[in-house]
Amino acid sequence: MEISKIIEELIKTKILNIEKIELIRGGKLKALINSKYDSEFGLNEINDCLKKNFNFIEISNNLFVLKTKLENILKDSSRNEYKKILEKLYIIEIDDKHLLNIDIDSRGRTYEEIKKYGLENSYIKAEWLENIDLNNSEIYEVHEAYQELLKLGIEIK
Image 1 (cartoon, rainbow, N blue to C red):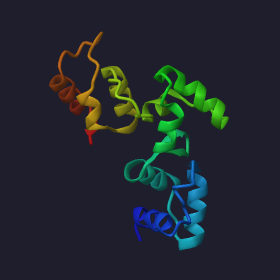
Image 2 (image 1 turned 90 degrees about the vertical axis):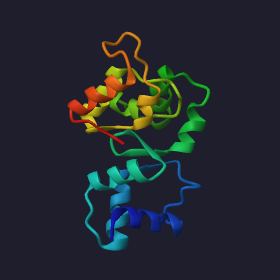
Image 3 (image 1 turned 180 degrees about the horizontal axis):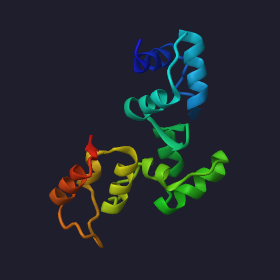
Image 4 (image 1 turned 135 degrees about the horizontal axis):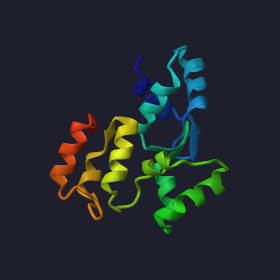
């Protein structure tokens, strides 16, 4: 069975009750899946599935928060305050890579932020290009940014 189907089944049967859950650790979900389904999925597979197919955002290594919960926590805060708020609330350390995962506001990311994320993760979200902030950049238009990212081998999803 595919990992996404297993996680869907866990949600449907309320074993993973996303109405009540605030956060989940990738390792804990891995242990649950391995014991319940006698499957051996790696942590990277599980994390990638949570990032791509479900409403979770990775805020620190292997620590995922439900996107709606994150939106409520950060709704009246500026992007500059996200790190401080989340580190205090969850008693964790958040690096810049994970701050870029927190995509709850409509602020345009700079070309440099998008490029950095893309080089680290091999992809970016297409909607980031729609709101790209090209001020103080060597790139002058969205089409040019798109072409440059593709040249670097960054997939646009």
